[in-house]
Amino acid sequence: MIIGQAPGITEREALRPFNAGSGTRLFQWLNRANFEEAEFRAKQYMTSITKCYPGKASNGQGDRVPTRKEQMLCRPYLEAEIDLVNPLIIIPVGRLAINLFYSASLKLREIIGTEKQAGKRWVVPLPHPSGASRWHQISENRERINHAIALIRVHRQQLGL
Image (cartoon, rainbow, N blue to C red):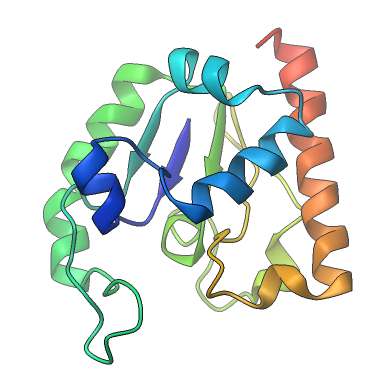
């Protein structure tokens, strides 16, 4: 299961998660964990913290981050999805999704490339693959992403996914 932040404008129009440029990068990463995009979309579950497009950011650059209230309004739906799908691996993508499983006080560099077990599930976070983000373009952060991808690949093999 992938958990993202919120649908973007192209996702809202296409009714397909991670549909735009960030989806291209995300599926490049997942491909390195031996997931083909079409197969992943057909067999794996993708959701987000909030279920509606939050609108444009006030500065006109990108999408607005869902408010805390919006996140809390959608939280029961997300929890129900997790219970219903019962995934063996959860891949939170981006800071908001990562904060569901890791302390907000931790920096991305302390989180990406790690894993944690939540009951019988493995949680392996990835940064948001947005082109607006510079985080994943830094060499040492790319190494963290490579390690996270390797963890996903190992868990996928061990769990027979």
